[in-house]
Structure formats: structure tokens, C-alpha cells
Length: 362
Image (cartoon, rainbow, N blue to C red; front, side):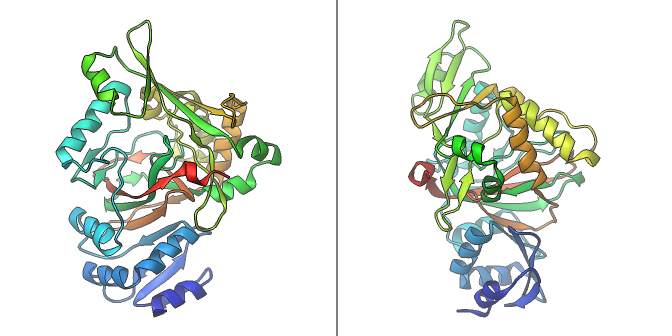
């Protein structure tokens, strides 16, 4: 066991010098590691390669691990840190075929024209730039949580922070499960998410051709638009390493967007007026829950309000610093973008390692 892994095992909520790094538990699920002396990215790569298994194990136990204070990190270096040094395997939901970045961006742009979506563009095959901060708060979600098959981890890198605010909200979804009332736990434990989109426009022959290669079930409406329904995916899963139960929302639905806005405004009162998330408004997606027999279960506005209030009240708002690299357990922890002034904000992401939520139903 290295000095690094020994210190990680023994630390509590305190600061330790470990393998040249300072470790600090910010809360129950976020740990920040910063350099004591050598701030070079080469030193960071060396540490990650030497302690890869311990780092991954720490992420799965804690939830979020942030490397902060290193210099010389750009998008190419970030790519090497995650895919070479940490040995993650890229598993981006919008580029499973590993096509060149320009083609992945075109597919993303096409998808946005059909159903809407959060603006993001690919820097290369694996790395995507996330959308800009605005005057709204996103709905809490796990990345790719609209489907059962998604990424096991996400890696984030801040190349430039926002001019003002623009944090990433993070929440421990196992903790949220534990804090749900018993009656809701009983109702939700074996529930599945049902997501269905209505297209923004009438669909034509090219759309139908493209949709043949998608997971959607397509139903043409009288208007010429289409409803695109996805297979049910678990609302709650058992965490692969800890066996904790974790909720798995993907809250970009139009029917829950009002609750997201109301509960964000009520919880984060000092952030000024918040508007509804434009992504959820444009997607025109409906989010319902069904039981193990496929029957729709109660999931109304009151439930939505209580659900999002609980998440927001237990959130940690991570204020980005230039050069931050965060590794997030995409099953244990959910995230969302907070409001702020965009400025030159540039947050990039790599989704990594395959995870099938159907294999981890309670």
C-alpha cells in the first residue's frame, strides 16, 4: 500500500499531506486533493498512474474526487489524464461509435434540431464542452440517466470558470434515498423512469432513417410530429461497490421543470430571480414513473416539489477553479449546472466506462 493510499484510508475530515498532495474532505462526499510543492501536471499524471486503483476506489466510496491547483492542464492533457493515466474507457452516450469529433458534433446538432437539448460540442472523439451558464438551474440528473445503459463515471475539467457563480451542484443520491419518507421508498424502490419526447417539428424520411438506429419507439402524431418513447430504466439502483440504494433521475422533463424552478428559487434565495431551465422547456419531454408491472404510479406536482426540495437542500455547490479536474461516481452522485454569468466559462467532460442500470435493480 502506497503512502497515498494509506493516507486516504486513515483520514477523517481533516487535511493530510499525502504523497505530496493535501487531502481535504469538503463534506460527506467531496474530497479535494491539491499539491503541496510540485504543481506540474506531469507530477499529477505520475500520482494518478501510481495510485489508479486507490483513486477509483476512493471515488466509489466517497462520490467525488477533485484534483485542484495543478498547472498546464488543457483539453489534450485532460484526455490523457482520464483515458491513459486513469485507464478509463470512453463511453459517451452521443458517440458510442467513436466517430471523429466533428461528426459527433453534427449528430448532436441534428438531435437538437429534432427534439432539442443542452448545447454542447465535441472537442475530439471523447471530450465534449458543456453548455453555458444562464439565469436558470438545471434539473438534477445522472449523466445519460435517460437510459439504462450509461457511463459509470464522469470526469470534468475547468479550463475557465464562469465570470460569476456558474457552479456545478452535486448531491449524494444514496443520502437522498435514505432521507426519503418510508412511504415514498416503498413506492419508488422498484419503480422505473418512463421518458417520452415529442419532436419539435414534423418528421420526414431522413428522420425515420436515423431513428431506426436509435433506442426510441416512434409513434407518428396527427400533426406530423412524433412521440419518441424510451424503454423504462430503473428509478433506483443498488450501488455496485457499496450496495447502497441510489436514486437515478434525469430531470430535464417539461412536466417537472416548474418544480425544479420553484424549489431552486426557494432553496437558493440569495442567487436572484431564476427562470425555468430552457433545455427542459425545449425538449418537450414527459417523465413518468411506473411499477414493476408497467402500471403508472403516483408522481404528481406535490411529489416533484418534495423530491427536488430534498435534493437542493442537501446539495454541495462546487465553485470551479481554473485547472480543476473532478472524477465523479455517476451512480452515487447526481449533478446539475447552477445559474451564473457565463463569461469565458469552459467546462469539458469525458463520460467513461459502461454501466447498465438494469443489472443493478434493488
